[in-house]
Length: 244
Image 1 (cartoon, rainbow, N blue to C red):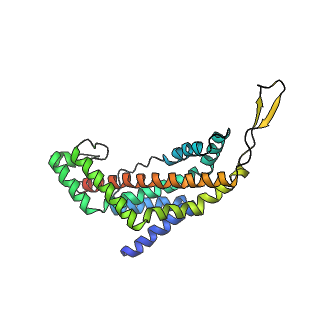
Image 2: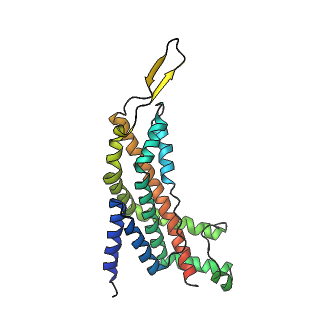
Image 3: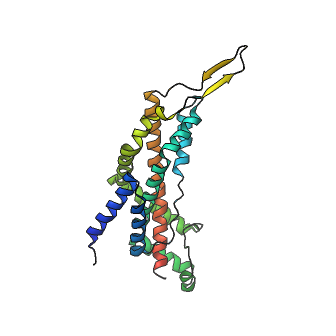
């Protein structure tokens, strides 16, 4: 049975929803298998770097709190799986969007043929995935990035996707952060008498709000970058698949 394009899109959306919001691992495996059947994915390498950037950002936002490292570590523990799921999802969406962008696929194919023999193209696992040293390739990457930015300014598709997810999944965990943080006791040896105190007071509503806003800002910025990177890989793989 051959599914219509609209029906297949609905299946994809359902699988993505179940993976993101219900943490259904089976859904992402099914989605990956369907993508592989449809577009023969070969170079899927999400880096899962967003959570590291979140920790750095929280440390800055909470300065000079003494327990800011403890807080950032706790945030990481609470939401890293949620952020990793989002990162993988945006990577797959970006890859598929790039794979079907015929304008840039055709242009990159022309560049590949001008730089490699057909035999070389046939035998390559990677095209310009990582090797972006050629000026014409660099220009294409800049132009693609600009086009994505313009499209995002007009549609807010990725921004809305990320915002909705963070509001539904991440926000509630951050605003309950105090209940997850164990009080840490420290001993101050600088005084003549033994001084035992709590490492830091409870996070205020303002601090919790600032933490969430910093997470949202960091996630939005990183997810756009991840989407663009995957988009580039999808374009490259489409060119290679034409010669496989």
